[in-house]
Length: 319
Image (cartoon, rainbow, N blue to C red; front, side, top):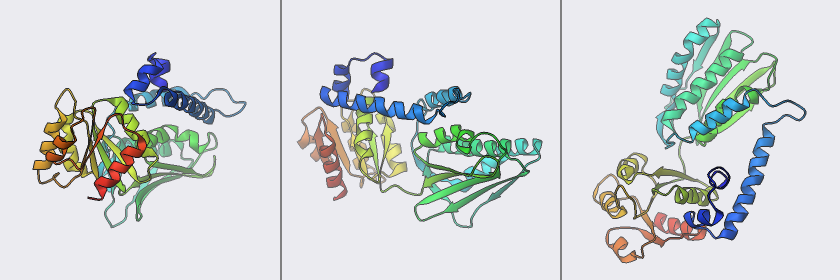
């Protein structure tokens, strides 16, 4: 909303219409956004210190991450970590650093964005190698009941705070909605912890070409614990994503330029890999009977409120 209004110059009335909100709600959300942006900027500034030289690269990274498709999928963390270690081996050899990777015997499958997980691990190891005060960097992967943790530890040189060393890693983790925690002090033992969920309670796959509607659903689900949102802006990708992710619910729009939602619904209902997945149709059309006849589990007419969406999702899960 901040970007639309202040960067693209979109009037608030148009934003309200696109996001299916009242103008009063848009004003409230915009005010909260401004406060959140101010807090975010303040968190990157040390009182009395000049602006950080790393601020600009991090901002550029954040802009670039917005253009990357970020869909969660099952990944083997052990394979990703070993691959990342191979990538940074020349850097470790050049700096005479020994890289010790420790993996458990049990499988390390977690949910992550495959396109970014390996890059995140490479960045973690690279930071550790370049910042190590001695010739030892250790990467340990552990599997818990609900998460896989990759911990990269090293004795740090005196200088920047650990959070500053890992600023780009933090940015990558946030983009993937992964957990991130740094422990230690400058000149002491520092550990960066990347935390990957082994499963979400529920995944909602949104098949919708309107980015404003997708963000609205994302905001609605952010307040509901245990939900992860995956998006298919192109309905032609819906079946393959549903087959791979096996979401708890598919939220389906009808009016889309590449392929109409009725065709998507029929495909999902006729294929054995997806026919069991509940489908919630959200559309401007009042076609409840047609949706039910084609196998939809629930139907909502836009605009949709948060209470309506959450109630419909619960009905879908109860089937």
